[in-house]
Amino acid sequence: MILLLPVILALLFGTVILVFMFHHLFFLVYKHDTKTLPGGNMGFPFVGEAFGFFTPHKSLSIGNFLQQRCSRYGEVFKSYIFGSPTIISCDLELNKFVLQKEGKLFQSSYPKPIRDILGKHSLMIVTDVERHKKLRRIEVGLINKFSSTLNFLGDIDKLCISLMESWRGNQLILFSKQAKQFSFNLMLMNLLDMQPGEPLGLQLLEDFLTFMKGFVSIPINLPWTPYAKAVKARTRISSTLKQILNEWKNRKDVQVQNRQQKGDPFDEILVKEDLISDVEKVSILLDLLLAGYETTSGLLSLLVYFLAQSPQALQTLKDEHLAIRKKKKEGEPLNWEDYKQMEFTTMVINETLRCGNLVKFVHREAIKDVKFKGYHIPAGWKVLPILSAVHLEPSLHENPSEFNPWRWTDPATSKKVVPFGGGSRLCPGSELGKLEASFFLHYLLLNYRWTMKEEEYPMLYPYMDFPKGLLIALETETTNVN
Ligand code: HEM
Image (tube, rainbow, N blue to C red):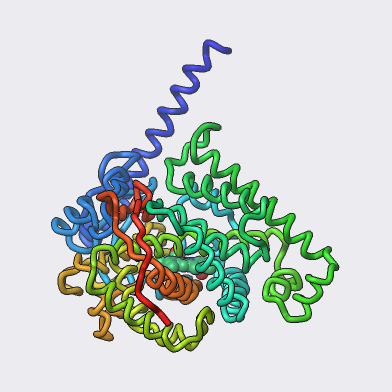
């Protein structure tokens, strides 16, 4: 029997390869009238064009693969990625159409490794329209409720001030890590009522960092791989969140009762809500912690990076924040009114999102045969709207690789930039992310000047990251504020 094992394995392996080749050829040659499909290349059997598609590149470019394919076949082309025939779209109109027709012609379709890591109850994964609506209503409610409370604004303020204090005397910092800690702590304080530095919070942060490494790694489930470690980290995160939820339900102490009487969002929406199971509640917390900290911290790093090379934008921004601070008493926290006055700040954040491309593309699948602009998109095919390609398209944006916040004075710009996706899956945390970034910039600009100490660029892996961690040198800002 032992001797037969290699033969059986070889046969199994051979069969799998043959099935993939057949699948590949079937889609390529027989199943569809190739004339109506967009042009393109299905690459090698089994892997298709995955290697080209996933080659890391600077966030201010679309990378060689898309560049070459677009110039050869046009902005919409066919390919074979993730073991599936795929339509890749760098076209603004098709991207918008795909996002708007969610649930009718297209649906979310993240690859299995991402589904395994996020869990089947994650909002991004759920495809059933009614279930998505129900979970989304709860998540949006939670985000809106806690971000509109005074507590939340006060927490951002406090956390920014203590971060600025912690940097005193430090000339060099790895900014990327600091930004991750900052946005994670903010989510912990507001979602889970935990103070920064609490042991359970530190454990959660460590598990989230492991989780993220696996999220962007090759999905091989062997004990030593980042992917396997991420799956384990996810299990630990879920059980910690479950424990927190249970403690919250059973606690009767004065602090909890006070919060319950005040209509605490966490209590009202997660503890009392009985339309969803505890597993779904844990998944909601996980969604918000993950989406809330990873993207916002990326945005903060990108802001520091782009502003370091744009003295004019930096000065205009500083003037805006000095003017806001001058109207306030010494030490008075920021409020909604101040936020509404941060007009140039909003333009800087929008331009940073356009150039930084935190989310390069989203995953969709056609659920019906679709005809659009003369292209045929067959049911069952993957569709990848590439958000970054539209942000960097020269026919839509003048000098697209130039960081120029003033381009946002033209209202048409916002129609050609979609960093938060669209349709029924439009990011529910967009305003929250912008608010956090605006407050953070306020304190950073009033306290420090900074320069980059190493040459590096934001890279898309496809998730955005700074390979060297964004090392910056800080100098205390001496401008007199009050
Ligand atoms: C600040 C930068 C952010 C960017 C660039 C960003 C980008 C995106 C994008 C492109 C999507 C759509 C995904 C898809 O269509 O498949 C999305 C969805 C989502 N985002 Fe964000 N996001 C940001 C911040 C946040 C924050 C702060 C939160 C929460 C606190 C959040 C929570 C979510 C959730 C829950 C979804 C899933 C929505 C659904 O499927 O219905 N995001 N985000």
